[in-house]
Image 1: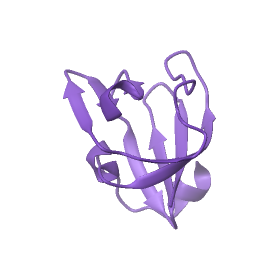
Image 2: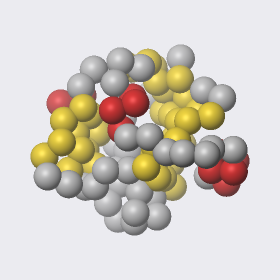
Image 3: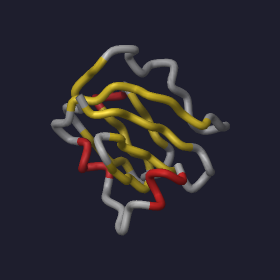
Length: 92
């Protein structure tokens, strides 16, 4: 996280991912983040839906309990959650 955060001046919303082709890189797990359904290869973010605080990507492929802070640098995308959990993707 420090590498991404140190060189990022502002954060974006999760809608930044819409239409992007990404590949799972790594995550910092926690109680509210599960990566079991994330494909091992590259996949495209086709939909982003908000239901209250919950954010759903690709019709349930990834479900987040709250909207993360999204930061991008050099083809690496970091989703940083208020719970301290982190999810990283690499753009393809």
